[in-house]
Amino acid sequence: MTRNEGLGAWPARRASMSPGRAALVFEDRTTTYAELAVRITKLAAQLRRAGVAAGDRVGYLGKNHPAFVETMFATHVLGAIFVPFNVRLTAPELAYQVADSGVRVLVHATEVAIDGPMTIRLDTEYEQWLADGAADPIDAPVAQDDIALILYTSGTTGRPKGAQLSHANLIWNTVNLLVGVDVCADEVTLVSAPLFHVAALGQTLLPTLIKGGRAVLTSSWDVDGCFDLVAKHGVTLMFGVPTMFAALAASSRWADADLSSVRTLMCGGATVPEALIATYQTRGLVFCQGYGLTETAPGATFLEAGESVRKIGSAGVPAFFTDVRVRGETGEILVRGPNVTPGYWLDPTATAAALTDGWFHTGDLGRLDAEGHLYVVDRLKDMFVSGGENVYPAEVENAIFTHPAVLDTAVVGVPDETWGEVGRAFVVCRPGACLSATEIREFLTPRLAKHKIPAHVEMVTELPRTGSGKVRKAELRRWP
Image 1 (cartoon, rainbow, N blue to C red):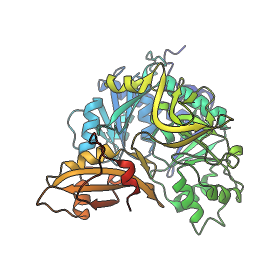
Image 2 (tube, one colour):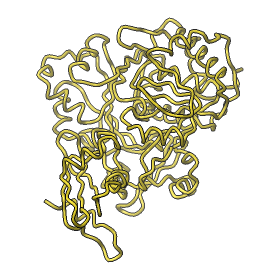
Image 3 (cartoon, helix red, strand yellow):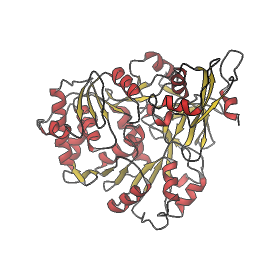
Image 4 (cartoon, rainbow, N blue to C red):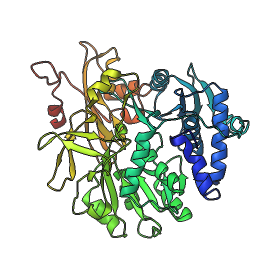
């Protein structure tokens, strides 16, 4: 019996059940479950030769690619911790996260100049390095409560926090998803959302692989490419944010596109507009949607497709093995369950603030209706979501403050037809100094990922503040 109780045992178990079935499709390359298991074993052997042991961290920096899947599972074969990095990070942001997590080996698809880890370049070194690995089975002891992932989520203080997810967190999230969605052994899942976000990983890839389905990976998402892949592979399951599905419906190809293979559409990141639901219903397609966070791996609530119209605007009911409660009629949303993070990497203060008696404090405001359906009302924190990416104003404000001509600044999220929300920065210059909105954005370009740079910059003489000196952000959101 294997001593690995975590995700690292999945490839070999699945290969024994369906060795010849396609596991991954990427561009013109198909990898069967048997081939995937061998490649993961060889890669694990190479990581072990590089000194990776249980509890060590292995990083991946790149877009969706079979190497992401292989590196993650190979890391878990050894009982080590996988740390996927967002490809949109700037060099300083990446350097901080690499140093904070202490990765020993970094597989990367983009050029990096970072001290510390051993680096394996995907396009020039990876394949040969993997091929040189031994194919002998590795059976390292791994418990389900061991940490499997560290996923960085920007902190309200401006410093990203490493949310830890255990093997149990990811396994139970998979079970929760399979209870809510009828993922089948013949599933063909389009994985176009980035796997370095927990939604794509937890809601599409892992449920598909555990069922023996086929994951079609794409390194980027575009409307025409999506239509082409659905037609070529007979895609049955898709995940995306509302802006992605709205773009598909707005395409000139929408009316004539063959979507007959699609059985399930999962949507997250924001409420699906009623008009968009109606547009898809005319094609015989209905959304499943829900609410979750990185720290809940991610599914906290789920709204099944049949309820998408009757409960428009709702994020659904708690996932099967998860509890959700709201403090008061409208209050902070708390989540408890086996899918909830044990805490933040090397940050006991943040962990203690977020977890009370097993309940995770989401920082979001919500209400429950008489039938137990959750409606997300607002955010206690100032975080906003732009194009599916979380943006924390404190981090942006800290970057703006580093400009020598800036005296004061505040950032809020404002509605945007394309991205859902974008940043609006209010900047006060020091006496005698003068800056333009263009100069602010140019200053931020090398310091922040593009989605974090405010789309709107207003130069003002002062910011509205409370008696205690705090910025009145609610008032700023109402400014014309």
